[in-house]
Image (tube, rainbow, N blue to C red; front, side):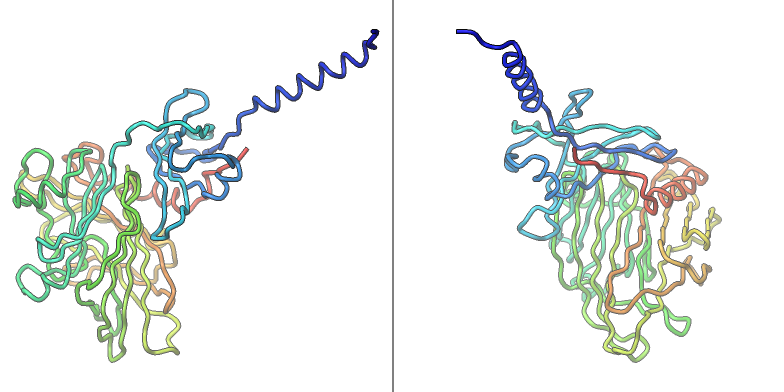
Length: 382
């Protein structure tokens, strides 16, 4: 039997092309189009896009690797309080104007270190505390308010110098104010906004809410912890107001992402005047009041042998004013009634060794503002 050479060539080319198609590996590209480095940055990959790229992916058992280095990439499935997956969170580092490609595989992933964690703490008068591998915070609940001793309105900072999770250990031991090797809580909040809390601001007065009454964890590590706190109605200059605050903390970040939704019973009220504040110490410290860029920073005076705390706020909208009022630095602006508004607030400790002076802290806040407000990270599904 004779077979034409052209027929053989056609069959061979078809087989080669089919083999190339079969061996093609889909990837997810991440590009850093900025002039600054992203270090241990948590990136969100939309779950639906992942599923379209990898339709046979087993979401109960898969791993992600760097296509070039073959190194495994830690990840988290983000639910945002839903029963359905919303995003795949990955933690990556990228130099300026560089890119990387991720490969998803139906293989068992390795163990991921827990880098964020939060919980309700009923054994300590309704605290809600949260942390990452850099810093820790807490807010206060109804039980502390009713007891009346040591109550505070603002965000508290728990300083740490370890990448391990320390909240459960500190609450178990009960010695928050002693440095047992991993940090301590020397930050004083009192009747102020502490480390970047928000409150309505009417007639030159801060209208503090009561402490939170309900809580809900939406996601809890290993790369992002998100929770929601509800605040009962309170009086704001003759009007009833209620609030929901949703806080997210990513691994590797000094700053919380805070979404606030105020709802007034006055339906005609379109904008609510608010302040975000930082408590000011009596001694001399360093301050950054950058109204144009919405950055409020404070490098506190040294707290004896405990070291020094830096506190900062980043506001993405127009800021009307920044001022010192009694014992607080205030950023004054407006947010929409009955709509969510997002800003950022956090802290650093010099003894952690990463940020050790005021200039480094203020530079960090400025860099974070550029990164948060920019669109420099591009995700491409291939």
